[in-house]
Image: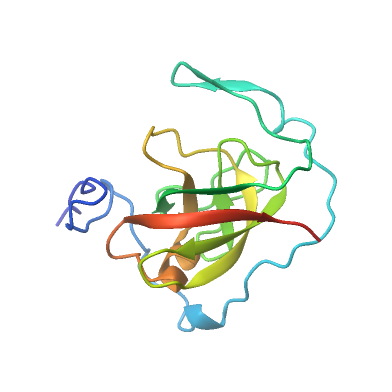
Length: 163
């Protein structure tokens, strides 16, 4: 049976986008997958250039300034698993990673679910989301640990972390 299309954010209806979802055999102990640990890494020389997506220009912020914002988080799963990210790494839906349109690649962020106050630390290694109402796309595991994997999206606060 095909999965339902994604419900609009805040609609109260869950669902996965088209053929995306958690995968057939997620690891047994998702709660034991550790958060990302901020460490110094050189910036990716390709993924931090200005770029255009869907007609909008994005300029990654490589200034090293603090960042904090609130908005809608969503997650991406098996549809993109093992595909190349903007950093050139392969996406691992069971890792603690995220996509952000302008945070440096790589960088680290604390993401807090504002409805239940759970938080995780993720490593930014991809670009997106490119929907105007979305702030960040999280790996399946990060969304699961934040408690919104069945909803599809939730309101979060994203704060850049430094080593």
